[in-house]
Length: 323
Image (cartoon, rainbow, N blue to C red; front, side, top):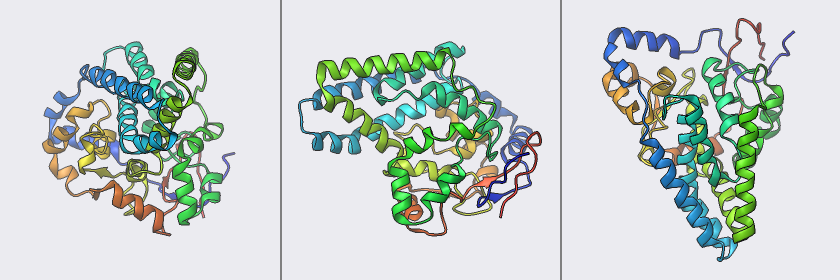
């Protein structure tokens, strides 16, 4: 029997994207031409990886406070871009075969300090297939996580600051997800060997810079509001939101989240073209234009918490009850 999940919002309707995809294809069959791959993304991967490693080496001789400032102002944006490219690899949107995409994602992981690419691939694809299913969607906070964080400024700030840690603690609740395989082991070996070599030749400041860049890129930073933007119920009952602000330039259009969920086989460079091709399906949806504004709204609005997510039960899992 499925354990009740308390506190979250609940919908007995199917997730909204599959139906909208069918309607868009019916009205605009030409959008199929946007479904392709973008091997040029590999050049961005190599450029950002070289940038981050170079900064780590340069900052290795500098005080820690300077490394943290650079991590917040520059490194966070670089690592966030790499996260977006890991996301592209997860959907096989760079190369035709899965192996090449997995290798590219591991290269993205080098400046992260912590291996995440292959594990993310497994969890993220389930998120698309089972959006809102508590036992299959790793994008949802765990019940204990939402309960202890609450809706206070301090709690939510703490959660964002340590967001990577909280994400790493979610797998035990998940079902039907292969956590460990040969690619995961390879990912760990490559990244940890790189970490050891970096520390051996350049010292601890270099790796601390990379870990700080990782933490800021998805945590207590305007970029961290991306995780709030995507599926938090800021304007219910709509459960998926896009961001059309200026940071999409460095974030490779990752803000086009409704578009991405509707067509996960369209690469980042074509997502604005999708919106332009089918404006009647997207212009009427609520969207965000500022991650910074959204960050402060989430922190200070006591009506928003980790419970501000929509749950639904997969037919195979049975009903999930709420308060």
